[in-house]
Length: 147
Image (cartoon, rainbow, N blue to C red; front, side, top):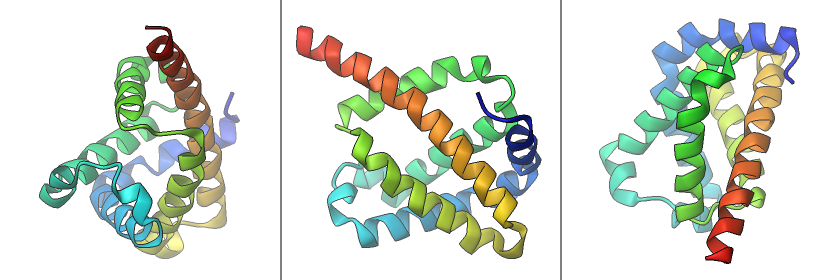
């Protein structure tokens, strides 16, 4: 479970994410693809070029920030994300790459507003959600292998 302080900090960032979320996700993808070209191939490039993928991720991050204290509201979106990750062959080793680039993008875009406290809370929240996704993806990979 996330700490109350982490949930409060993440929830408090929701307004900034509403304002700057798309800039953060665009920056994250630009950084990630420049540093990890092999990861770029896992993404639908048409959705990247149209801006649809950065918009979807920004919306997911905002929803997470707004519901971090009531994750049951996100069970449907989390399952859809896990299914999509299995379709595109996301593995646990990809999560650190995203974490590094997402946190750097938050800092790049929000500047001083992304204090150490904010970045630490988002790191904790990211890994909490990542662990949930990884577990669901493991189940889906196992089901796929059994078929």
